[in-house]
Length: 281
Length: 109
View 1 (tube, rainbow over the protein chains, first blue to last red):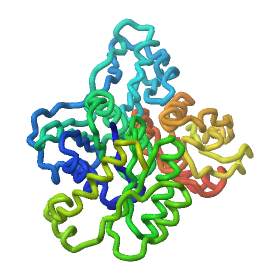
View 2: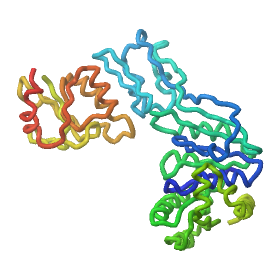
View 3: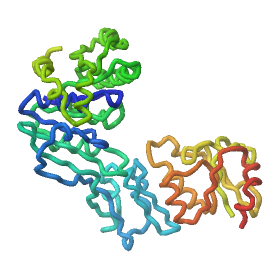
View 4: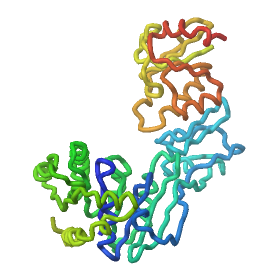
């Protein structure tokens, strides 16, 4: 079962929740798909067993063979290639390339366009107790984490395993990529107008994607800022409320997982997990 | 020299500048020696998803323009335009007539 942990607003506690779920589940997989700022390994401290570069095929122009006919640029729907016959130039913009391969397919010149592998990020895997830990880390300067996220989901996750995917915040392409293959989505939010506002956006997204979802309300002090009412209206259950406490914050500031700072919460997470995996809520 | 000016309407020298570069409504080409508008082309790729700047950059060069006046260009268009030593003037205010007057020193030759 693939459970995605996401949120509209940043800093609500996705990593705290997904790391704690992993620690409560025992044998499972924790995958950090927040590839622009993966930091879940700070909580879990896995022993790294493997580190590989993630690459994508991109065209490489052989200047001496290119006739500047422009077939590649016309075929590329992403406009990742520019051909300027008057300058005898063919230019490639890797940030726009989706690795579809159409340019090398349509090129009429033998060997003028070849495919090479271009690294966009690093995938680290390891173990923390019974938890299989996977992390995607996008290279600085890469315009999109989507291919790296998709590559990890496709090739690194055992479909039979219990998986907790730590998502980036928001509702844009990287989040959609994390949610695509998920069986259940946990929406972490906080009781503030900002938390509610961004929760609404995320709920729209999960509804549009047809994913079952539940809310974890973190840092609860008193008022719920209208989250409970919104949850009732949209028929999304509030699975758990985590209190705001100085003890938790202090532990967080030292990289200590929630469940270690507040052992009593383990039972609540375990019950929550049983409900979700049993197909309830 | 030939200069391309990114405009939002097809109104000759009175056309107002567009606030966008690669997604401008029209591309106007003016010849500073002949002192006349050579062409106004509708931007046929302004609604494409990505890389319109790249197409626009290639279009500027293929039209033989030595200068371009429009919104501030991003890194990809700039890279293409630099290849052909095209002078880039960032300007989105006024009409073609006003712009030609405002930048006449840079648009000579």
